[in-house]
Length: 325
Image (cartoon, rainbow, N blue to C red; front, side):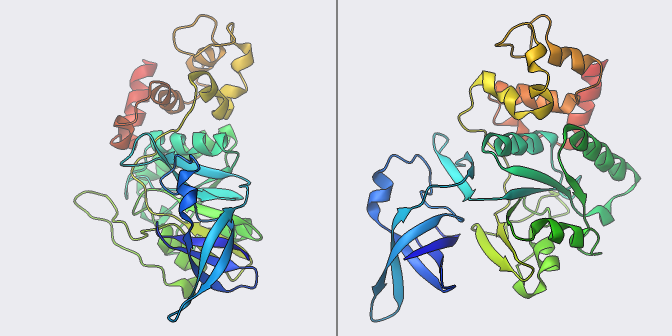
């Protein structure tokens, strides 16, 4: 029998059959021996083959094959740095929820996520959430960020789940597609999903005023069928986004505004740091490329997987202004 993985808890997988039934399945041990260096060989979104196993208690299944994935998105495993964690597979588009200060989402985090989506061939769309909570300063910051990413070519949405602003437009973009939602804990993923599909009653939480951080409410990635012909994969909030297996010379390819200019650099293997006649550095000096993006590029190039976790947006922007002097 064939089905799609809707939830993974690490040892059990909820699989939706082609008939629409949900079956709890386990994985045959041999999958762990196939050299897959991920902490989760089977991910939400995977299409799998399984056999039913009937016991006296319930009907369960045993997964014995994973179909080839159309795509998938990964990040470094939090505890095992040499391994990857597959967040989800077979995705049509991914929405990254961004909040300015409630909690703060850094440009470094945004750019690492976008670079990974580019590398794995998945369309990424930015959702600027909680726009109803912005004051004059944070509204300016939000519009500035939106301008940066729209200029590059990324679609951006401004949404308030509580005031139902932008929700209908988001639903239109999701019809007929598998969409993944991601972002820091507390950016409002579950609240937004509940606004689109109130019957789901996903658990939500309140931001800690002291730390400005959200608490994890989604423990495992899970797919949901929505009433308007869409499927969504809700993922646990993530603090950092470690880049996986990228050669220094290929990182440029995943920054669209860099990629468009790189053939104008004097050297084919230009890393856009100290090399002469670098088209990207020239564009940077003319403010044709955002300094925050260039700073993110340097951090990824240097393998800085620690500091981006603690950067705040204000510090990113201040650093950009300082570099320009």
